[in-house]
Amino acid sequence: MNTEARATDLDLSGPSNGRAEDEITLGLLNAIEGNSAVTQRSLARDLGIALGLANAYLKRCVTKGLVKVATAPANRYVYYLTPKGFSEKSKLTGEYLAQSFRFFRSARDQVAAILKDCDERGFRRIALFGAGDLAEIVTLCARDFWIELVGIVDGQVAEPEAAQLRVVKSLAELGPIDAAVVTSLESPQGAFDAARAVVPMERIFAPALLKISRQRPVLVAEA
Image (cartoon, rainbow, N blue to C red; front, side, top):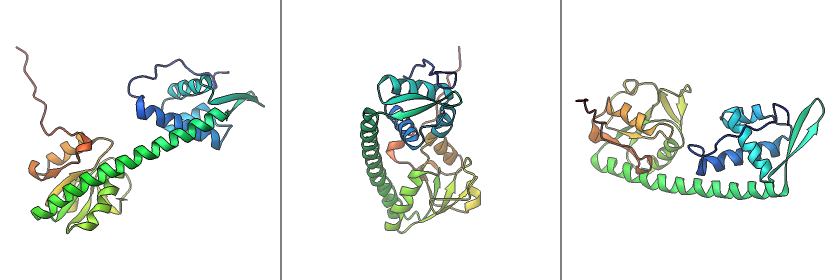
């Protein structure tokens, strides 16, 4: 392969393992199936990973017999899924859907329990901290309770609306609230800490799946 097609020997252990590793591989196989003339740079951009990591995953897919490389005019390379690659893509797709369903079911149950608790305590105006899939699930579950979702606090989202709710930079823009629910999947602890700065601790709720720590880290002074 030339510089574009050469895969760097990177360590694929660490953060990009397990489920994340499977998701990257599935994304790579889907991209190649959709466009055999895809480049490694475009793969890296579309998958949201570094070029070197895209190279490493592509090299491993070739080594495992999932992808075949062929030459093309203008000193380019094209990539094709092998029968084994199609089989692997189908398997990973099924696993991804199963994992997504398990996440949705777990998140739905935990969110419903939180909203039921808020309803029973008379907390009617609820603000969410963090846009994304979890906020969508809260929106769906909220229809079963006498509560009002007043909006989403998320300083990283440029769009004015998400999950059919208004998105704001600070809680002050939403007016008075009774409670807050942490819904950020990207930075759950950060969202919780942001909520704690403006909402009483006992009125902040978070699904257990986010694994949030409610204790501030204790800094021990050096002797």
